[in-house]
Image (cartoon, rainbow, N blue to C red; front, side):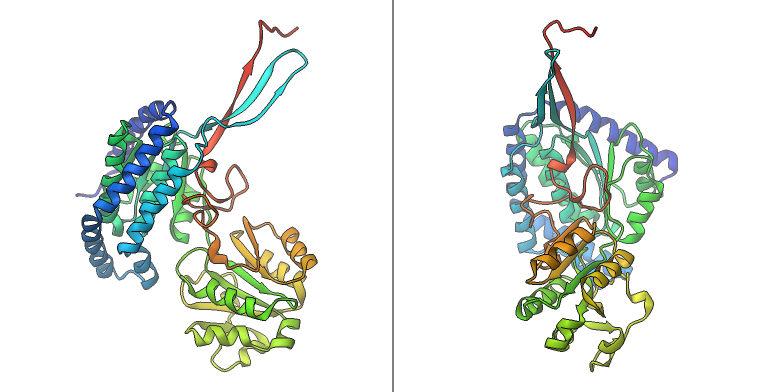
Length: 423
């Protein structure tokens, strides 16, 4: 396909946006049963299409390799049987959740006889812009549909074939349930001008959700003329307190860094209380080194054999690789101060058996997700029981943390009177 001009891109997004707007009228009145049926049908179609999806993914992997995509991004792009089955299970999990639309969030009576209800409603049309991970196609579509929203999906250039194969299965589910194809649409081009057109599609798209690296998210936050749910970086910290259980700490630190290094919930900085270090030495650092992690250490920790002296720029860095920055701190207050300075507001975890210290950590930080004695890799909508997530939001307006179906709703007021007039 030839490069799109701005006019061509605007016309393409306008066509998709108008169709999505029409679809929202149907979705607003669609029963919970029909949405459930569409999601179950889509899950079945994904399983039935495994060969086609894997073939498409193989094409994408070749395209990405030729582009020189980083290993962590190649891992995000790669699909296999278990990942395809996980996508289908995610769709079924979302289908099984209570319908978030129509929930009465609050209700009360006024002295004048008015009865007022605040009721959950869909947002409208959601635009999702994402890189590499084709499973986002299924996750985003499922959550949008469950919450009664139409969605326009723009996957990364390297995942176009995989996303198209997954989208075809989603469309099968829609048709089987009698819902419009335009409820879930995929932008059919790799051209970046289409992204810019989505960002300026006021009146057509109600909210943009970016899933990707700092470059993509920063661009979206800077250029979008519609509201954005996003996090810029996942600079996640783990703090090993002096009152931590050493065996729990060893398990959590290793998992937080090494389970999957390329996800936004991976730990990028380990802070160790000097009291912990005095009792247990460099055991946490050694575990990371033994696991093949490049440890960039500051101060005394840089004397541990195998570490690399940390540079100032290593703190506040999202590595998305088998690299971690480590530092000794004097207690929870210094840990909090460090995280306030270098964190991105995503996820932080404290390892401690001391309730008061954990309470101080929780009250002293304002990241979207705070954990105790648990791996930061749990920063995921599926792990929170949401079935899936459309992203992690670190802003403070409307949605925060994992964005599931419930977070993709707004509300309206329903007011009932009995010939009631205002004096």
